[in-house]
Length: 213
Ligand code: SF4
Image (cartoon, rainbow, N blue to C red):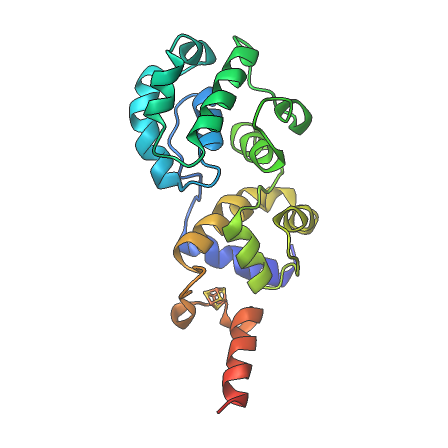
């Protein structure tokens, strides 16, 4: 790993030792449901909903045996709950007693599962070397100049090439936590950040400030 990446990941590990997903789950299918619910919703909102839901839902069969309207109502506090409920039901029916697929291609055959969701599931359940880029990773990677991209899909592709497989776990979960709690979209904690010197965002911002003085 190059020096810059090492500095970034050492600092992230210092701030967030053993980073992992903040979604709550105890079975592989619950992780799939939680990830599907998390699109356009915060992990906090999803955990609130699944706290009750996962008392009854542990496997695909548990979903299929539920009354659809009741299921829909249980998840109605998350965005796009109607389409999410439909996709989760269809996914549960398709999966039946099958194991959750471990390839992106097979995961993306499931209703409502796109590339980002598939990468997250494959990474969390099977430790596959993918980086599912959300808004936090996309922002942080660009601020630190690991990439210069406008689309998260491109950021994902480039980070997967740039970051060695043995660092992808920290890269994925650590960068999410770093963006969520430290390098926030508004008011990033630059004052206390140890990455200031290698941060394009910080350096550029201060150059602009000194010019305009
Ligand atoms: S210096 Fe500021 S913008 Fe740069 S990584 Fe640190 S918190 Fe984020």
